[in-house]
Length: 396
Ligand code: FAD
Image (cartoon, rainbow, N blue to C red; front, side, top):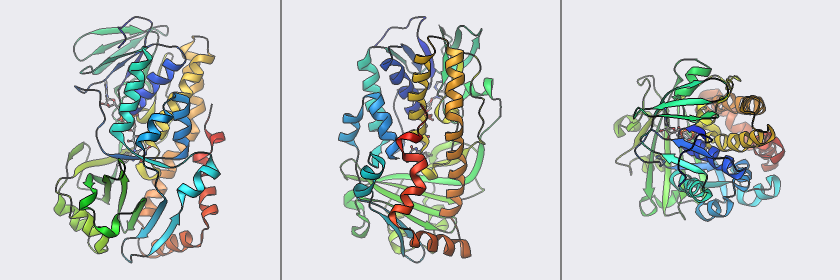
């Protein structure tokens, strides 16, 4: 691992976004210092979906081979009505996506993706990693930035990237828009060994069961040894806070009326982790001189398009390109980077909210959703996704 020096770009946050930023900078020959508040630089949580656009970023980051070894490439994406049990959409992604988008659709354990990024950062010899180092504050004079970390140390570098997530400290000095918006949607997440997954649900597919004010997603991870489960429901019982244990009784009550296939999955889990899902309204002013934001710190979104981590990695690649083109002028680079990324990420933030409503529709809206999806051909569905997945849509 690299020793700290004053030339290193400072990065607050060692999640997927922060490490992708450090790696993208390393690929253009720039050194960085990543500060992570947790005792260890690692990822929690379970699976994430990777749209074809993510695979273009893996090429740029030079980690495609490693990711491809660890990801699962499912046959289909299947949407089910959680009350009637009717299949309303089946998209043969393994067959269609590589041809249409040039890249596949994949599923990976977050810890595996994070570990690939971490190893690549270490191998680059250009990244210093400090755990137990919360960035408490920073001061910038436009040419250099000094951060103060929770252990009382100060570190100076030419620029600061706030990749410190939904509750970003760095954001407050730039955008100053208070707390994130509590969406009223709660996610319970768990991982189930395949031998405990009911036979009927052991599909090599990303399956979503949509019900009134709830949905369940399940898909295989790690060579299908385990299944990732995300159960989401509406509740105004919870305010902020995340990553605590969920209450299985409440989950059962919220999923009342769902098909036995859905309830059968839920009852297999004894211990759920709970997330209170939050986002923010999009803004474009992520940059102030030589300080900028990236990933959830810049554009936190609901998970309904499965793009938050994909966007953080796209940000990283884009940011490094702007740093390289600017000839060392970080204020200029960060300004043009934020302008390049703003509308793409804003569209995903806003569209994710709409998808959430469609997933959780009831009554006539549910019937309209089902009728709409059933009459789409796979080609029509893919055209609706092209703005997210096509290579040409990723801003350089
Ligand atoms: P984070 O992952 O939040 O990382 C921020 C890091 O910064 C953390 O390690 C934190 O400890 C650290 N930190 C915070 N403050 C400080 C500080 N002051 N100093 C130092 N360190 C600090 N995305 C997808 O692409 N596909 C999916 O399928 C998908 N599914 C999801 C499902 C759910 C239920 C949820 C909640 C999200 C999902 N996402 C998905 C979104 C994705 O998880 C996030 O968008 C992504 O993790 C953002 O990465 P990040 O690095 O920007 O932020």
